[in-house]
Image 1 (tube, helix red, strand yellow):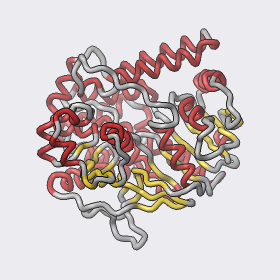
Image 2: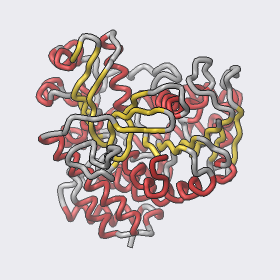
Image 3: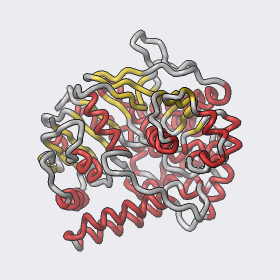
Image 4: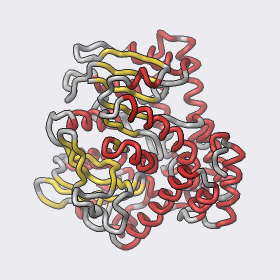
Length: 447
């Protein structure tokens, strides 16, 4: 089997490659093809991957700047690109903060700007996938993952799936905390906007006992971010990105007070890495490991106390995107069923919605059973109260964003920004759009 990685000049490639070479890997790949239009970054990441220890399971590694060549014969296509680069992220964050609203990569106006830049490029890639390897499964890592995945369904249909490891990571950490296997759970939401409302082990339902224990909540990052009393009030554990909705003022104040935004930190981090790795290719792998540790140490720093230690990195192949990627490929290839939280259309086989209150064509983030070439949504309890309201509101924003990108409509883009729950003024939304369009040449198509 062949895996093609689009955006191979990025930082995830070594994780995927190393996970694919483990002796215990659940799916064997014959080839991993790396594609990136940036020859310099591609060459550096090829050097990093080439330094990883060889194993009998290691697939053949190829690399190219020709997309069609990379796609030829692919069974799986992973895609993780950043249109506008990390410099674009800095603009997304700083422009929003300059107008007094949240500046964050995927949540709020920054996420809308990112999506508006990215959708046209991703649709062009999807068109080549459909032409060159139409039977391949397209596994989307590109953020904002839910919006991007939904925008590709008209081109790729059921063969596209969006991946985010934050809800999966929460479940994995809960299993470790409990010292038990999680046998069942209820999770519902959109990408970076969801809630874990039930957790079962062999003893039965255990979420209430987790919520009742300060000692246990203290070991759960999401609970520390939003507050113990608040998760008890909710009766659920929220996705970590809900911090930006539940503590909007505090998040903006923290971001404004910080010496640099997350985007600015990433720019400095990546620039230093590529310069050092190019200058000292023999140390490229060591430099990559050091860079990854630095990135993890500042992840969502605005939501955490200054003295909170960085979370330890998970074992390669076990956690993160690479673990999810291997699990999806294995289950689709017939190694046995798996239940994974994924971004998929809100549609049961009978055409009715899985998540009540959202349209069937909307992409939602829910548990899915993956088996033998099929990805089927599992039933979830209907969302109620503020959860349902927030899901409906943000999904309306997402679908307006897709419509704006598809039609090239500045009016629809303004509407998407204006109705987002984290944008408190139609006038500010207009200023956001005008400033983003002036700053990003990739938005010149909006008229």
